[in-house]
Amino acid sequence: KRKVEADVAQTCTFQPILTENTQSLAQKYRQKIADNCEGGKITVLDILTAQTNKEQWIEETKKEIAKKEAQECTFRPMINESIPVRQDETLQSTGDKCFDLYQLAAVKPKNRVDKTKEEYEVAKYGNE
Picture (cartoon, rainbow, N blue to C red):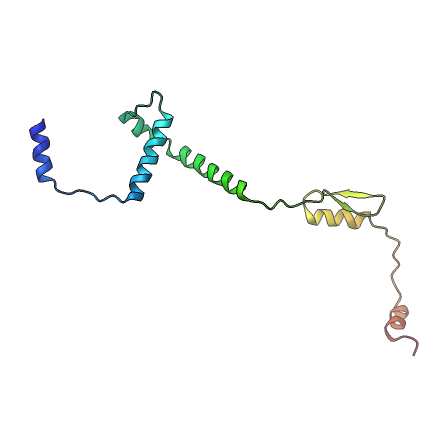
């Protein structure tokens, strides 16, 4: 067996070049697998089954990143919960601006009287 390995080592001269970034990513990946394994030892089975859990690991990592970004946010908007209609009435906001404006128009008084054509002309031209 060792003789075969020595022959393979002499005939196969290709050695991949790994950057520091690649090595650190691989180490983090191995550490993540080791953290999920019981007993602290990584077996071949653990490495092979880790590929099936990769999507779950990606989702967890995305959630962690989003959580860290949310902690960095300092802006906290103040949201008004109600729209003042009159001093004695308030209209609760539903979150839909169009519906809120429709409700606001329905609550306002309807005592407005349309002007006649003559009144518009008097307002426009005055008493000439």
